[in-house]
Image 1 (tube, rainbow, N blue to C red):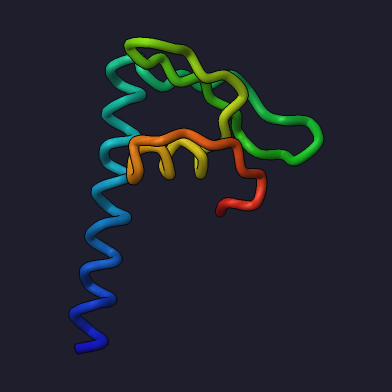
Image 2 (image 1 turned 120 degrees about the vertical axis):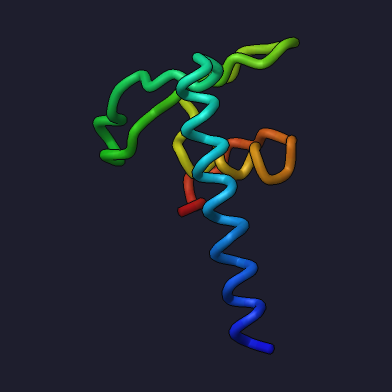
Length: 76
């Protein structure tokens, strides 16, 4: 049972990573450079009703999972 749960988690993360790459290819997620303070890559997300700037990759992936954006420096 633990193996099935682990496999499901890996598959879900793979789907999020794939969707993140597709959003980059479509121009919905655009790389903006590295944050000098944290060393993390920053992105801008272009949504139909708003634009979100200075988002880290983990925040973008969290948005993909939940369809709600929230800044959170502690996501990995």
